[in-house]
Length: 110
Image 1 (tube, helix red, strand yellow):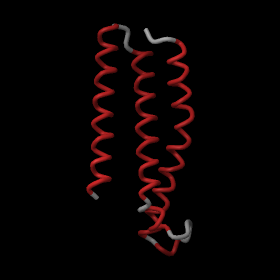
Image 2 (image 1 turned 135 degrees about the horizontal axis):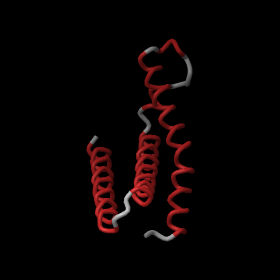
Image 3 (image 1 turned 90 degrees about the vertical axis):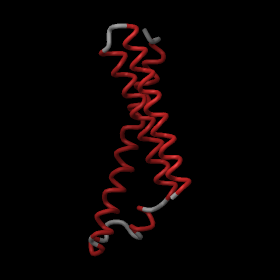
């Protein structure tokens, strides 16, 4: 079983990154729509905002952090077997490390 401090830290991470992920994704959604319909005028220079590499890296980092903490919290709460819990944690870590490496590679290549 995970320590209460770890669970509190994971919960805090999910609580903090949730609104930030929502805000960044909303910006991407609005700028994407504005690029399709330039007459909207919601965000100035929508194409620059939408293609900004710093905003993209921030979105990736926030999404990965939020999903990692959230999935670990779900595992701790829902899985009772110690072995299955550790296996699920390992799977989550490997999968999100793969996604992080994939996104990093795409950022370098593109």
